[in-house]
Image (cartoon, rainbow, N blue to C red; front, side):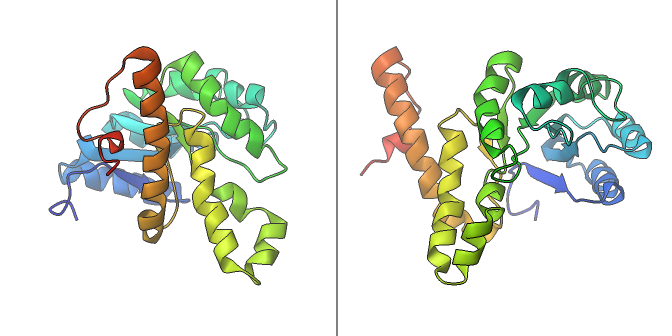
Length: 221
């Protein structure tokens, strides 16, 4: 696929061994500068950390998931102090591993189990750390028990909530959204473009920040 696009891509799996294999493959094929390791988190194994230290990818997602505390303070602890078996926060750990372009994922948890704090942490994270921040916020409506039941009656409502959820964190200042299956791109992209237009219009009118010609704000007609 690298001959079809020069876009960055995620090395992503629930299995650390698969992520490590993908990381080494990216290095061997000369694609490491476009790879984003997903993710460095509290479950990182010693083998995984050793591999990251050896390969040293420039970019990785730092997942601010705290299984003990879903509050904003709990998410900060993961990034700043470390929890569970980690003796230091993910930000310092990433720096030591040679990761120079971290992307902070606020780790959206289920609705009713900290999803609101995850969304609010978007703004807090950018303010405190000054690093690109985002999340897979669509996981929140997917975890909503009532909505999952209603999906059997009206699938369109579920899909609408799934796509629209991306606007929640975008309005909090998210730099990226992990929106789910690529098949949703045709629906998600216009929604995100609309959010970008709102932000750009405000920035231009209030602060004189002019968006570039390629920005959705320049494509209103």
